[in-house]
Amino acid sequence: MVSEFRIRTETESNMAKQSGSNKSRLYVPEPPFRPGDTPDYSHISVPAAHSPVRPDPLCDADETRDHATSLIRVMRFNGETQGDWVPGISPEIKRTALRDIALTRAMDERMFTMQRQGKMSFYMKSTGEEAVSVGHSLALQDTDMIFPTYRQQGILINRGASMKEMMCQCLSNSGDPLDGKSIPVLYSFKKHGFFSISGNLGTQLIQGVGWAMASAYKNSDEIASVFTGEGATAEGDFHYALNFASTYRAPCIINVVNNQWAISSFQGIAAGEGETFAARGTGYGLATLRVDGNDVLAVYAATEWAAERARRGGGATLIEHFTYRKSGHSTSDDPSKYRPESEPDVWPFGDPLERLKTHLILIGEWDEERHVELLESCKKQVRETYKSAEAMGNLSGETRVNDFTMFEQVYEHALPHLDEQKRMFAQERD
Image 1 (cartoon, rainbow, N blue to C red):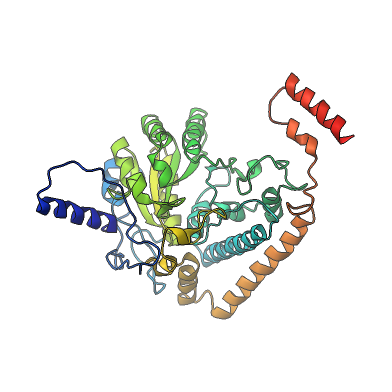
Image 2: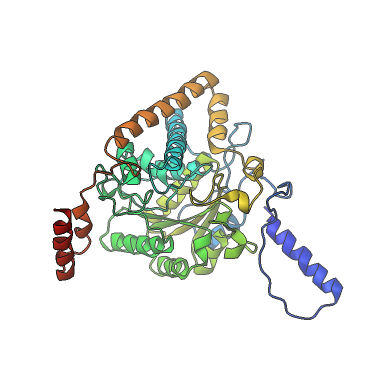
């Protein structure tokens, strides 16, 4: 696959040579399309007939060098599957993936609407990226520890986390086990192996690799899976994590979700105009894979490979999930200010929900009628669950959170100045 950004950079370089300029100029990356432009991705080559070979999971890391610049795909757009990476999973598991993707999307839509109505302060959707979290989760053991970002709702859905509790954490109400101490969508579910989300994505990387090193030290077969976005690969934490993961062969998977945009800055700001993000792992001696993030079966296959490598002592794998963020970065973001409105509709790798539906229909395990019923069922489940969650409080009314909890569970031992503030607060309330 040739990057459109690389084409543009080479063109500018040739123009500079022709002009005869020998002065150094500061180069500032710019996205190829701006609001008002007609986005055109015809220059992106979509592999249709093949994927790179599937090597042995315990191969030398250098044997995956080409996998960092190619693209692992399983499903073609007509629903057919082909290549070495086709996973041997049942139609039932595929239908589970379809349901979890649909349920994640339905929840996102509901919560986004509720934020716009003032029921919560903030929300972040994962529309268009659901296959990354769902496919990844399906290929792991429930005892494996996930260090997620704020777009991995699908992992919690797939692991059976309470949707009502997820909603209560977003509403910061009396049903929130965090007592409203965290920003909405920064979920924390220890019982589901879902490490508390950090708004600073880079911190998850070094913590996750450290957890994996500790697991290996204890001779456990549990592995860690760490997520970050392509923007955060420009931070030092990313490189610290890769160095430790390589040096100590930590049993972990480092996932870079390349959805083309880091907040309102396109991937070029994180050096995305150069080599692929997966290729950054080769410099650290890590196994590297680049996968079509809108192909849930390809995500499953790549994760399964990396998990087996980690569990058998082969060390860490860096996976770049090549996908697209259809919605804004968050409810505080307006993507129409920096990208064409139609850009999400012309992304050449399609929609993960539709692609899996097409595959299941092709193999005779699904049909349009059942699909409509599934979508309606997901909407109903989300609607009823939200009503139950909102009954425990919301931002536009009463959150019903005990205000005194702001002084608790922050420090291990009570501090004198906080005790004094708590006393003064109690007096004011009386």
